[in-house]
Image (cartoon, rainbow, N blue to C red; front, top):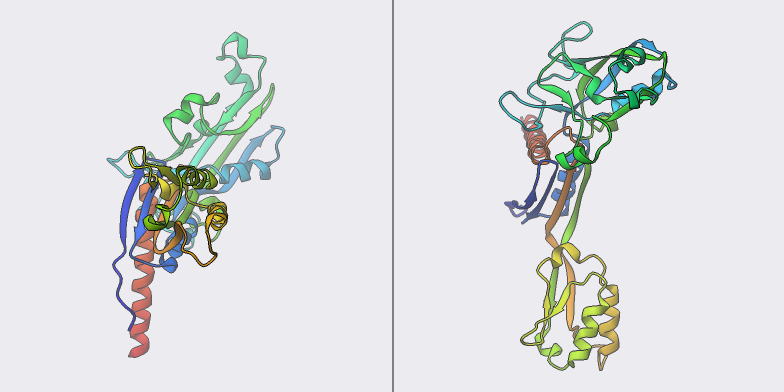
Length: 323
């Protein structure tokens, strides 16, 4: 019988749109499963259907519909300011019993922008410029669901637009449509993907052979420090010994140059390495960045929920086979 494991998570840093954490006491299969669920199986909302009433812009209907589908749609639970998991608030469209669409399986956005009407209210210095239609112009029929206009306040301060650009309108041009957002997962289409980045790295195990290093001169030790392009080593100012830097786990990716420098310093090829760097098989450093549809922390929690649901389903199916 396989040995039971008890995975642990240690948060390194957390912000609304990013999270970094360590997953330990498990193996690569669990780390990769968690990563793939975050990418492909966490449910989100995305625009899935667009009904045009007027489009006299330079872009055709299909092109604009594709841009709308890639807008991150944010569900904010009542009484919260976070972009949360929408799986309890909405049903997948195919599972809903309604004829076409309803508030239980979809959210309707309306957009109606006429360049000539809006241009009358613009400052004189902007009236000769094209009008940028952005995600701010989308009006939702659900107060809990809105487009994620910006990823962070810093991005908003640096932006020249009020939201995510959809199309530019000129004199005489008019854009009017209804857009229907539905819940789905990225396994069906990439527009439902909640993450821009979801990666993990193996935790580096850095072992310094103090006995072997004592035979090196200070110049040779400095050469080892400079040989590693990742700069995972440093010299102790007091003792002059080689030490691993505090954030070595973030930096250690390529150590072949360090290995080559050590081989050149050895008296015999079979001598032990001065510094030994290997990848841990049960400790992983995750980096997750949200598209804005959900907070990064909620993406991780939702992926764990999906994993738990899948395992419970598998256990139930196995029990049925036993019976």
